[in-house]
Length: 274
Length: 306
Image 1 (tube, each protein chain N blue to C red):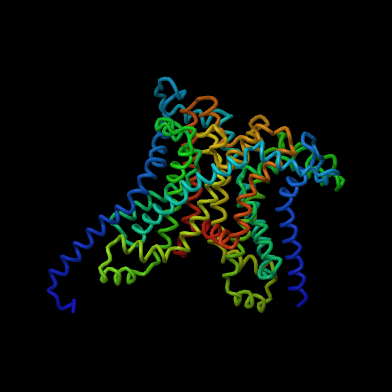
Image 2: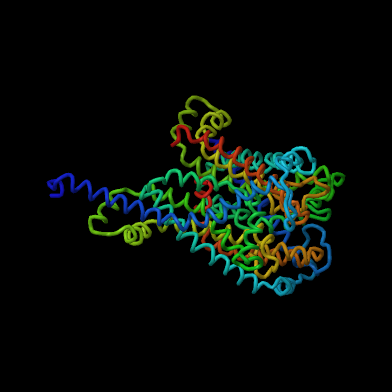
């Protein structure tokens, strides 16, 4: 009985060490953000005179109010539509078993591992020809397409496990395909849909490449893309940069802490299926 | 009652229902397919097409056949980016998976304790924040006056301190460590979730047979986790090959080309140097490389499991 106890203690120690390493960068950002702006604080050191005002200055310098609005608009453009289209397609392929569905599914799966860098160049010219460069649509529309493989894959995995009898009885009651989908299958799919929503929210909010290539105006980008611009502008003022970074990563952090159970479950399932 | 109906009519009705269902089914898929075709399939085809031309993005383009691909494999600036991406796999993939396995095995027993529950939240944080923020935070940690050097001096290792991201010898491993930091939590939790599904009777049987902790780990834990390990490897290998955000923020590919990766090189070629054809050839190679790495891992786990 001595061995398990010692093992438990090494386990605890390891966990604490891992948590410390995970938190260290956040801690360093925070402490550095409190130093007078323009200085180069040495490592982790609590400042003599904490400059809480740095957060306010960074909020103004980064135009945070605008950025938040922009990111929210982009998320609202991407997530609901992706969910609706992905759910419909997943339903047709997974449950209705449409003719040619297997081939279609393979075509979608092909896009599952696609690195966005692979298509960014033609995407730029395509968006330019559509006259959408420098608008939020330049991020919204491609992201819906780029997230579609995962959305379809995810929803199909749910629908393929739904029993056929469920639909049979609804059909006998005279439901057409749309009613069957809307009244019976969507309510049952809510857990899968909400997990998908969480993942899509996170990936949209943190999207960087599309934002920096397709949108020049930082206030029309995602938070993540704006942070890139912020670094370019204030990269030499370390405390201000740290304060700005913390502000910009705060929204996802807050959302995560509120919904953490669902988040962890969604991300773990998400990578298991993907 | 329905069974007593004349068979031919019933079959015809069922047939009709099936075709309308088929048509309606396609209407369900169509919108998704349109978005996918316009913003993924078409760009992939265009990338393949661009890769065969020399084009500055503005003027006329000229056909060069496979010359761009030749350059990708002979021009050190381009080929090295591929080599760097493969080297990054060690950090993005090997470290999180191996360390994750070790940590998960050690904390398996206390997985239900309050500390472990708190750890679940904390260890997950890097997955949630933008990679860009991780890049900025770590650039500062790894700078010449950063915490890492402070810590090394504390240990009396002042001689090895340096600007880790600015040194030719250490820039790539330093960038890799940022990736490892991001991915370790995800791997650990995935593996831990897999371990909770292993039948405890297996371990008891092993104990009775006198197996030690190491033997247990090798002959029970690792084989049972085959699928979870494959998932971790796939996700992290793709993250390594397609890395962009962290490197763009922390080193911009430098010093020199020491941390240049394909994603970043494509970005520079296409949008700074206006060598669209070359960027596209590199993009094709990258896409093929990712699929070539992801498919075998998937196949390896599919058999026997589904």
